[in-house]
Image (cartoon, rainbow, N blue to C red; front, side, top):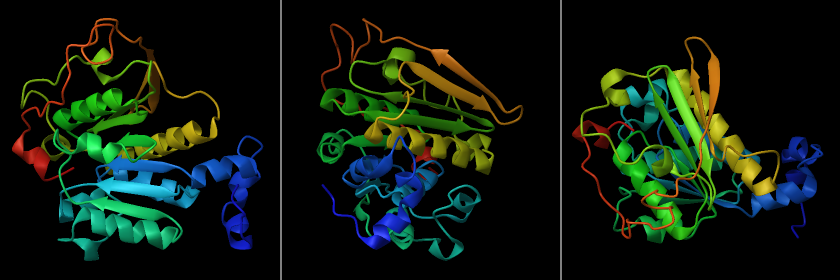
Length: 269
């Protein structure tokens, strides 16, 4: 059991006051290890809120550097950070908000050669990427390794998210395979309202904290979508598919796949 200091009691007092969290829940948060894939629009609010909450270890994966066009939505990066690796910029802000958090940085692309080795060190994975190839890679790696994860995606004025636990519907249960390259535009092609990154990222952060504390009901077997133009939220109930290629009764995918990725995806997460 963690022996809380006076400073920690004060820092986390609003969590400790919550009947559903308390000292025990905060202790679980402080012992947790979370990997955030992507230090962009979604990864920014996720990382900041998890750091503020006291997550013990946060890993951040991103091979990109901060671009001026990122600042419209990637609130963990400041103007002075343009040109810096996103993982370095993110680490600086995470530790500025909470020096107690251990931050591991991975200045590299997540692919079939390193995904399983990286995620094995963490209890929960957050998908903060904006391209289909890596989303399927994260899904498949987490299913293979038995890791829970939060999926998130944004485009234009829309967002979607769900949470996967072993034995519940995965990304391939809903979407069997990536669309053809170029069939669906990315944020850098179609644009995105900056604030919806914060809307969805904070939902993913809340799901992460709920997972560790056991509070409420996670977004398992449910796809949550919203349209910021109308502020309408919709929940679509889904089921784990027996014929799913990765988590079904007779999986046909036995190794990670690096799908072709549009070149614009490589720059602007």
